[in-house]
Image (cartoon, rainbow, N blue to C red; front, side, top):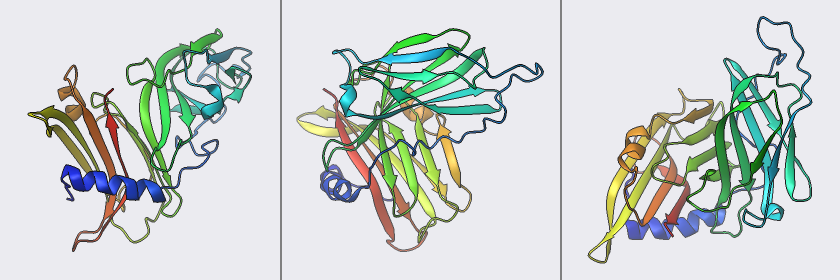
Length: 268
């Protein structure tokens, strides 16, 4: 597919980010909700749950005033419940009503709006097995690369109906992608990730990974940690200086492609 040299990639970053459409994410988390009754299978029990999760934003964390929204996705078997938190003064509150008491695989997501035309939106995620039989307190992300909350880039294309999140850290294989039922003008989706280390004063590729998806076979939402699994595993505990990611649309013939999103992250 389309593999760019680093100088060309860096030139493309500015032009792509200038036309990227990233707005509020209050209703744009791309995880589907299969709540149903939310009742524990086989119990006939109630979904009433007075417990809650509090996410505090102390001075050592991101400024809560720069946050866009907070979402939690609870998974137990085939049941997926997506809930939005309510913002307080220096915290978010997420009531657990509708989530029966038990242990749920939970993915908390803190969304940050872009700070400039060249700086994309961020999504910080914290994954845990949450005991919903009790209330829980969490501390918000710091915004640093090394944190219990994993940093992700987040992008929405209003023109194509594509929503995309991808891990920043090379050792993290996570990505999310939502495609509409019909992808306008293009047949394929291409995601690529580069990792660089400066060797002899020159940025050198030390790891590369890519995946290709056919739009006709891939519709709706997918969260994936397998496709970039080998890429991420190879980067565990490996020093790096910068990393690039791009999301592209393309057709099978000719030089017909469009870069929807690209960004470079410097390790500092």
